Image (cartoon, rainbow, N blue to C red):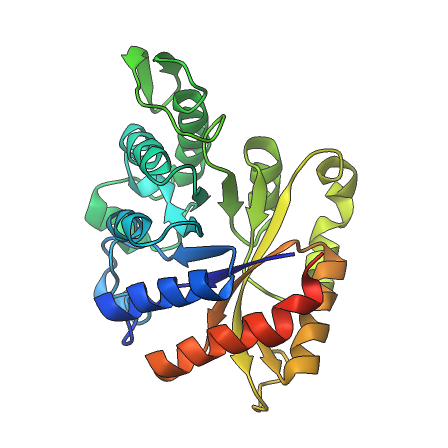
Length: 291
């Protein structure tokens, strides 16, 4: 089991110091990875949670220079809202400069207004997502000259250099909670990155694809809120919460259902509380899942 930390690059607690201090605390305490959330141009109606947000690619580049060993993740890059060639180039450069520490999760997004603000078609985002993933793969396969012909994107004999440090490019996960997202992840990605629902729902989602995902390396990375301590949570809450024993049991239930990577978003009221939670989790809870 591996553990990633969602950084506070969005919301009222987001600031330069909160982001960098959380990243350094995660690295110093043994988290496997740090993760940034992505949005670019949400309309006011959709901006309640993610309106104040540090742009993900810029911020992760800053963090690559501020850390040394921890993996750097995007959770989740809304790929159809960006030019895939530009994304491929930016991420290949970042993987190269960071020494091969990048992990990328991509999704189709949900805000029609954000697509309109950026000038992209909301209704073709699924098809463009499929082509964009293929373009990332094409650009990252290690050849200097690459070509691609698709319905939405095409280029011929394009020079692409430098290539990523990681052979074939950074691990590429597909985000989304639907069966369509899971099928896209199996067909085009290295892993599936859903939001937490419940261990039983995760088990049911994976039931029909076990024979496929067990024959090759495939990551099931669940993004979940986490709340340390004795707090009253609604019965159907998707947040992992409770004391040490309760949290270990909940993570174990997700692991039994198929999760092998937990991307955790600590629910805290201050930066000092976040840093205490990071330390407490890695010293008291994570050791129960180390091989």
